[in-house]
Length: 202
Image (cartoon, rainbow, N blue to C red; front, side, top):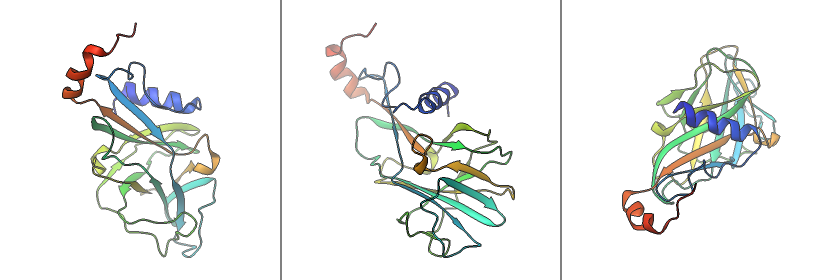
């Protein structure tokens, strides 16, 4: 993720603001950025294979015992103006982690109050890594390579190779819950058509 964009998104979300667009994004020729809350999130445990953790206020990942976190966003990347330029996952880390986590795509649908380790959907082999995590801080991970603008919904699973693991605020915490940030770039044809009628903003 571009450093300026990441820093701006994290600052806005940390302030409790709903990100609709960055300064200047109101112009048709500029980028449009939107942040969305998840439809569902939960973690699953290899120790409690049939237990559901959909109501938990914390999302966990660990290698031993195996803990995985599932997050789904009800967003249609196919619709909307312009082309999807970047998709980022924002999570609020409750603890420090040097190893961080991996984000993988999930194709099958699942339900927050029913998902368990035993029935959890399979995860993709492709992933992107978060890098080290700071405690009590937001971090943005560029997941553009995992999704396409044909997606009708976006579902991820978080894994880790670390035995110490990591923990994140769930959507039950509201303000610190996960966000999916989608940046769209207006097409050139739209720019040439509307640019003349769009007033400049000082």
